[in-house]
Image 1: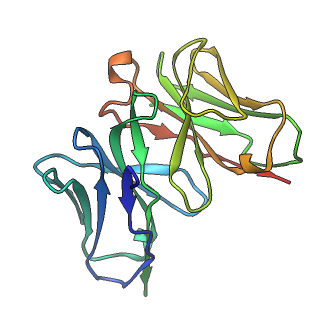
Image 2 (image 1 turned 45 degrees about the horizontal axis):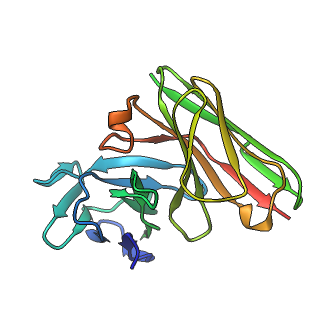
Length: 113
Length: 118
């Protein structure tokens, strides 16, 4: 089982739609969670951190479910410019025992006109 | 404000040739520095991290090496490239401090370097 798992998609949605992505993680001791956005052939950029109580930033809402070990990202009123790959990032123990930020493979979103 | 740059942006190298990717950070002191690789359709894999000048830790055995000759300079190298070294290489930084290494602090990425080994 992968340490951080995401549905690769693509999620094809019309403009204005609401779309949600989930990400599951394997290590229950994980403490830090983030969503990054990566445009095609570009570097990942921080979209938002995920807090235990859930948090919102404009059209974006992130939630954490520790019991089921997943985080989610909800995008409301999708824009064409939201088309990108969304990376789930979790603070996990690495293979060498060090804590490391582990990235999921990403979920691709394509918003269509 | 802090900025991070890496170069070259794109390169095509023959198998067996050497490699040098360079990364510099501005606007901060003693950052933690990282090299990641992203293969097609896969997640980012941490290759190396550094908490200070001359201090390099390797996360996975590989054909690559890293060096940190100056506080805000991080170099990824190889003496002989393999086909499997192809990928998107990303330099990144986070705030200083061993206690904060890989903790909840955000990491920021450079623009990335596309390497194709032929």
